[in-house]
Length: 105
Picture 1: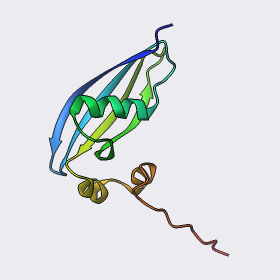
Picture 2 (picture 1 turned 30 degrees about the vertical axis):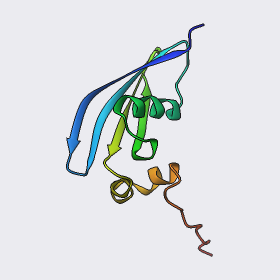
Picture 3 (picture 1 turned 30 degrees about the horizontal axis):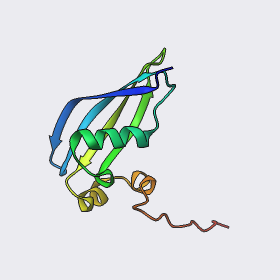
Picture 4 (picture 1 turned 120 degrees about the horizontal axis):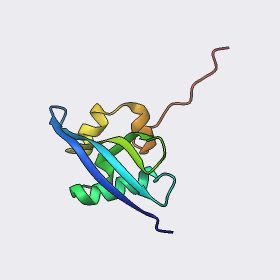
């Protein structure tokens, strides 16, 4: 069984938050879903960036399988990413240390 994925981007926008944003379509051949890390690696090779400034999120698989759609952000530098990205996405990339919450009692 062939287990390759094909990736295309659309709605590529450069906005004022020192980033480029796009909608990413992942076409799956012989797989249920593709891991985000694999999609992130392929997209960083396509756009010639490093993995630390590339954020992918919000993937939804279409009914019947075969296609998954999500979002991708490429920041100009890691400092801009730390400034503009939400803390939960930074924590997924190990760029933000969440404080352990104390109990309220």
